[in-house]
Image (cartoon, rainbow, N blue to C red; front, side, top):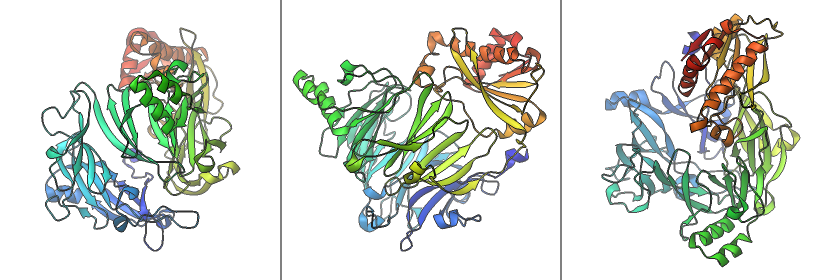
Length: 576
């Protein structure tokens, strides 16, 4: 109970600018605890954040706001007005150089507040200089919208790209925005022109800016997207505001992002030469990048259907591969700083980080450092200020080690000494000194190797008598992996139990194909994988059927429910 009620958490922060004069970083955090059940939005500086006793200044107290307005407000996050999109005299932003320090600050945000935790939210503009809401009926004419499943982003200080419920035809059958309007400050959203719209049967549609002007060769990219299903989208892109939108010539399930002059594509189905106009097949799970303008020209030619234009534009394409999956490796995302891309990959479900630096004058990426082999740990990084520096927030944890937040510097990755300082860490909530984490593989019914992690006492005797809890999920391309197991540690591991997590198909441990291989008519494979892990634990004499239990929640509950039907004799207990 003490662990569940503990307020011990790392106060993760987001940089929203710099203190005028000192240049110290302005860091914001939303925090909930027993004294602030609805939460407070607060700020500090990097100097203070690096100290043991951080001094916080409250920006917005949600408990007080809820009491004042007699509404049970729930925090749903915010969208900042990027410093580069704001007016210079307001934000004070000027791009830094090698001889000048970063400066300027975010002055406005769009707050999303939910009524009692509902999916729909109210949108209200908030001024970070005055630390107050911008009155929609006042001189500043702040942006505000009533309760709806709204999606909004700034296009400039006085213009929003917004999708919201404006009446008949504005929402999809899924209940999300079907249209995007360009809404100018001081006007009615219903009168704002529609600049993009999807089909009524789409999940949703949206429009946003990708500002890459701070990197060599980069530009302002404006993206429109139609989410036609949970995994499939259609993308339209234009470079700068003077060009027309072009439908990208990619498969529907391809992920799209930008870095400088490069368009980065996450390929989720084999991309054949006839479609990409190269001599290569880019395999499912690859991460590929190509010159954005060249690919826009190629996509435009394909959209127009002009064979000669397609051939000419295709001849100028020069694809580069950031990640090429193997039988044991998969792509797990990336993050960026100003000059670096940090790639995450799983090697038999063990995390690796690779550092790539952008080439001279915005040229191709060059790998400059990173892990030599996978580690049984969780590791994630995010740029402190990706527009202006190569500093990172780096968070690590494992099954037996609680989360630790470090300040890191990507520019030192080649020396493998990129951690600058340890900022915050959580206390150990249970005794893990006598525990060990190991990885094993079971063989499923069709011969596929299924990995699983096991946490147990060091040097346990394999006599088949250990009480063992097997956990699984197997859905939505979600990967199970190392994370600090507080409740399991206290209630199970400290009492001598063995805890096992199975990386069955349906998840994302080996990329999109691992997920896709257990869908629809092949759904049985994830159940067979789970059974195989249970049988392997018994065959390895870790446990016996009477000492083996399984557990799952949500999609994992469906999994364990199937165990009740398909393998009741394998388990002594089944938790659904």
